[in-house]
Image 1 (tube, rainbow, N blue to C red):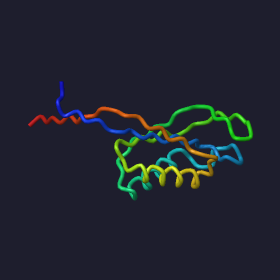
Image 2: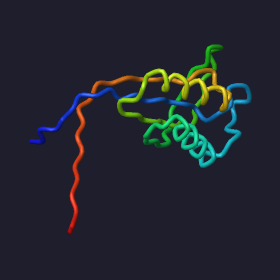
Image 3: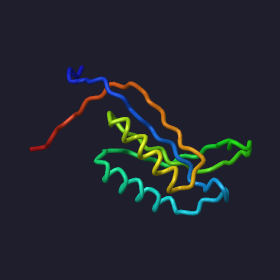
Image 4: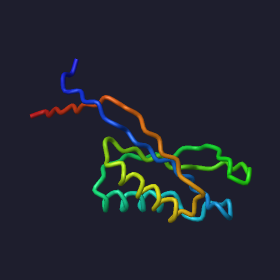
Length: 114
């Protein structure tokens, strides 16, 4: 058992890739990931992201099935998560983005062949 385990918070931002007004994905997924990379680099945050499929019900009651981006951060400043969420919401013309917070345990493993 690793004794260097540390309890941390994991923040996840879920952002749909379809424009809220036109209900179409106007920007290629690859370009959106590049935008996330630039945004996180500017804020000095390490992250992981992946594309997933899901459904969303808009405030007007419309249901849309779309790809979404799931962006994961471990132990960031919560204010920065809010700023990134706002940026992505505005840049991608979203009704909203969802942020989840989980308490996790983490540790690092390091090894080399030399």
